[in-house]
Length: 322
Image (cartoon, rainbow, N blue to C red; front, side, top):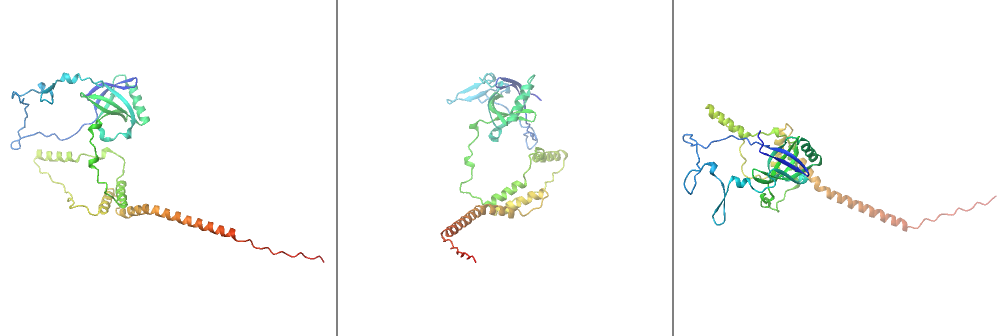
């Protein structure tokens, strides 16, 4: 595997030479654009709109259109000479708890490999991050573009994950449901029941790209001259779901059926839990009221007993001596 970047991690006064490798590889079926009538490949030519000549890829530069319509041309040398202090250094800015970084900021992932005699400081940083539960926020310039990134341990290696800048993440308020939307406690309890039914530990090996597998089946059938048998699919639901509780119950039953568990009873349990949760404050208030009444009654009885005069004691006459 070829490294895409070489530099160093600046960890205080410690410098860790590293090589950077792409951590992910997107897999997909590659298609060619062809003429539907005869299968001929479609070719594109780069034509200059000024002289009408075809331009070689090596003669193409980056252009930025100025407000007056003029074009500022940047060559490969201009891009290589950008004054970026992070061109060959992963600069550690600060350390933050890993759970505070929203996954929406994550862009691409890379593996860092210790280069040369840098194994000891590499392991030092890796283990220190793991023990403290912190993630290093860093700046790095990859492919002539500076990016914010986070550095964290994954198993025995350090992973560099580039991030979007804050102004590249769109505001989400437009997608929020209307504030007047309300759900009943029973519906929330049933939704929680469905979540608990499917709750498990994350194992990426359980998931597979069924779309790519289906494409491969079609391509194999085309290559061998066979027809593809379409799998049986469930009929799509018609209309809007009116009874949300019934839909949730059906979801729970189906999830349990797929796991080999007995279905049913979810609505009763969920409704009972919601009902109990709703009645709990009322019961508590009633118990408190009853206790207050008993205390008041006891206090009244005590007062009455205190006001009642003490009974007179009969004097026993002294016996006369014989």
